[in-house]
Amino acid sequence: MSLYNSKESKKEIFNLYDQKLESLHVNYEYLTVSTSFGNTNIITCGEEKNPPIILLHGSNACAPIALETYQKLIPHFKVYAIDILAQPNKSDEIRLSMKDDSYGKWMHEIIDHLQIKNITLAGFSFAGLVILKTLEVDENKISKIYLSAPAYIVNGNPLKALFKIFIPMKKFIKSKNTKYLEKFLKEIFSEKDPFALEFMSKVLPNFNMDFTPVPTISKQRANSIKTPITLFAAEKDLMFPGKKMIQRAIKIFPSLKHYQLFKNSNHVLNNVNNNIVCDIIINDITKH
Image (cartoon, rainbow, N blue to C red; front, side):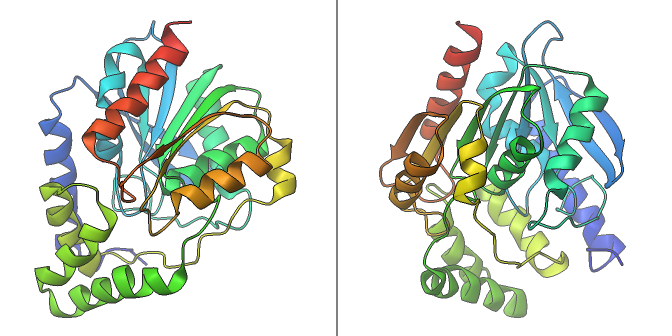
């Protein structure tokens, strides 16, 4: 069963994917990695001699969005932007469980295929779960991780999320009235994003999203992680509240090296904050 309602809607979503990628004006190549979980599409860019970094996007998104978020890194790194499985992108439509180690094992198959060591992982939102699961499975090839408003550490108030995000989302899916789409995107995004409006207007009614509640990492598993963690949290994040996240992260992650709370920021960071994230990564990895 396809996660898309029709071949036409899949084509429209892929067209938007291509438009976003071309708008970035970067030299890139596609790479397909065959894993036991499904074929995974990767966009690679940057020079081979530069340190490697894997970039991961959030839910209901794609690798070009991650590339845009972290575009400032491209001149400094060999970048691998990965399309997460079962999202509206060019990887296979095979949904993994958030409750077990599947996402971590999948990532390690990719890392093994790429034959890279001392790799940095960076990602936003749902990517946090994928990255932390990767560390839970094996940390040996990973040097540092950078998480922006990540899933899997804390969850927000479910009632607030229901009324401010999920009900408007459902109303949009049913009515196709963009006022509902704009209403919940305003709650999620720190600044207006015309592409997000266009992309989500195609994805929401035409793609079978995963509404499974996101789990949170256990204290025991968090305690076992030794890889240095840098955490960026958003103060007004309805999904994963920033202050609550930092408080828990300090308690459970002995390897938490640096954290920053972006004031007045919604879940999706603005360009200024994304550039701050990029500057910290560049300074940490390439200047030392």
